[in-house]
Length: 200
Image 1: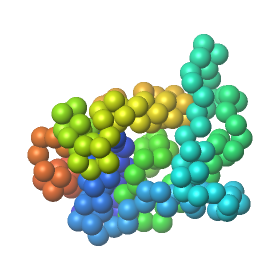
Image 2: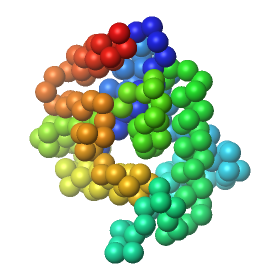
Image 3: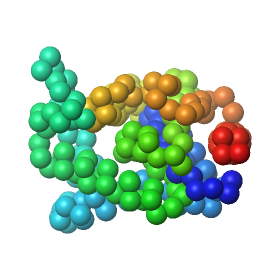
Image 4: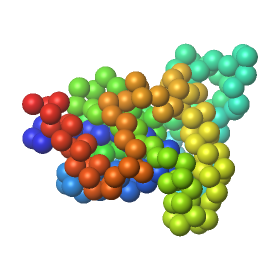
């Protein structure tokens, strides 16, 4: 892989998407950006007195959909200025990081933000329920599948609000991978092979 590459990773909760993104960045020797994005965005807005958990809560303050719902990408105004401002700041940060060089970006609707970037490859990571349930017990402090699914619903709502698209639909991504089938290391190798084939 000789050219610049910006890989965005979206994932179901409990499927190992963060671990996959970490392994991918390490294998390619490029930077991984995750929650650093929200801290940089908050600093741009002058928000210096909130903890990471408070910032994450602010970030996810999306009101339930209704018949009068207008998605953010159509400039709807059903959301508080703080949360909307944070999203705009995050969008600016994501674009700047993508301009600065090769990297892996986890979440933050980055697949949508960078969809017109010619060096961008988007990946959605999923897993079977049984695999996620096992990981919920072993890796996520005993979270049940119901709790994992509740987080997915939150992510889907956030994504739809800001992009007007349905989260997790395969046609919105360059590649969809299922982590319950083979090891993360083999999946990472497959992703790199896929990107190399496209860049040739």
